Image 1 (cartoon, rainbow, N blue to C red):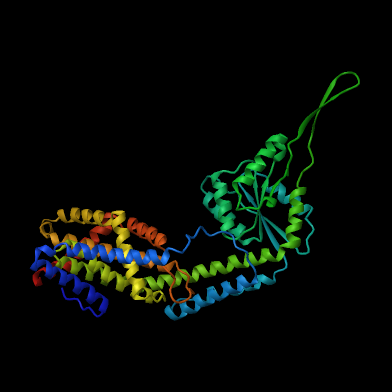
Image 2 (image 1 turned 30 degrees about the horizontal axis):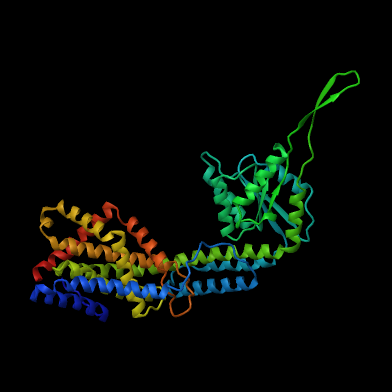
Length: 482
């Protein structure tokens, strides 16, 4: 099989591999050179990576940030960069819809009303609170519009539709009032965490508090504050009784008889009204900024998804080419320990080429660090062994290929190179499209987790059989020239 190699890094890496193979054939005493060079290559890459990362602190999960006009202007500029880049790289994509959404998000800043969503599970008092707030609205300099969402966390044929509608309404609102009638469930907490990450302010209201004794009420309130600490401010955790349960009252009459009557306690939403009044007076503009931020972020996600899709279409043929270059080199090389050396050389060039597609300029040192680190992670996770065993098993089912031991090395190397390429695509697609130059240091933890996810997603038997079939067709013809 003839492969034209026009990249110096590929020629150097594969040439070094074949050169070491020649030394091995001349003197068996040098048979350990392959192991040493391979380990050295991986260690050098991993060592450079560790050196560049040693002073960087691990990044935690994205939390709530303070949204102001400066933040909005910065995000808006980033979205415009993405849309402009999309026009350059994918002229056929219809961008008018994205531009219209962006314009609508900007006009949202001049909106004079405030939208408040009332949400929660079933039978937590959403309708009764909606009626109370509509009948006696809190004082506000702007018009208030209350929206009751469908019940969350329901079961049935329409539960998914109801949940999706409720989430959409909550994210489109300026403020969310989330009702619960007791301690939070895991599902409720997860939902609140989602709203928090979306920069949505939430008032958590412990409703129907009248059904509990004062001591129980206090315990539940403190438990709620403990559970959502860091997600919802203590001042935004409130109690209410929107539809108090009637109480049985006994009165002893003059003649000694007992008269029993039912009396309904007054509703209790004073603390909620007070907090709403404070928020609308002090943070009304911030609510609109956060709402606009969510709208802009939605446009940004859509534009970035379209751009990454176009880039992936260009990256896949490149990965396909590199995987068979590595496969051919490993198939032609009888020294198993040198396979990773050729793979690292090709993968380093692939990092540079994929970086160009994703507008990330990587130096040779960065590329070698990435290739070496991915090889090291593959070894630590046992992916090389798993891949070799799987490919061997698939080849044994074919009598014509069972005796071709070199195919195991060639197909394994090709498959692992494809995994490395797909990992880079996923990693680069998640990066900020307006990252400053030079490219930021690699995040080893994120790259490692991405590699593991990609490997698991591409471990299906049908997929591997396709790779094996393609490899047999591509690599076996080279046997005649070896």
